Length: 187
Image 1: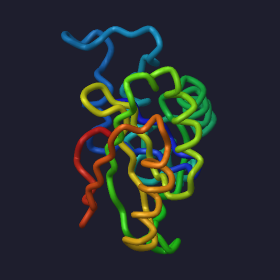
Image 2: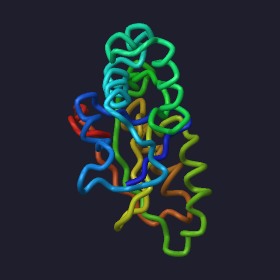
Image 3: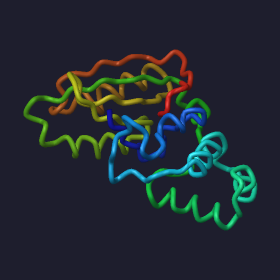
């Protein structure tokens, strides 16, 4: 499953206790070898663990916690950002405080002939204010949308007007989210 960040900036997060599991040490048996991933040492992994708990940790405190000089720590954080290990620093905002307390996951299947328009679909959908996250899938469905709406009428209007009304959409299935509990997994 590939996550596509929404324009509103609702990225996934990595739980601090799982950073070590998410990024195996170099040379570990069974670890995938991918040249596009940065090679992380124990200090880098510890920096990621701390920032996953509190991305606002001051550089001096971060440096002290990992046992390196502040200038070295700043350089490592910059390298982690430029290398793609840190994708950004974001506020985790509750959609309810923005007037969108109802959340849902919507599976979307496109028409067989609409495959060539997937990128256009993605570009259009990700800009909609209701869309928190958009996932491009392998399997029976093409996309999974995490959306937030003001109420059930607004959610229905979103599904009807923004999804079902478009000829490239073959099928949608909406599942309401009763409660969101952050998991212990790495994503």
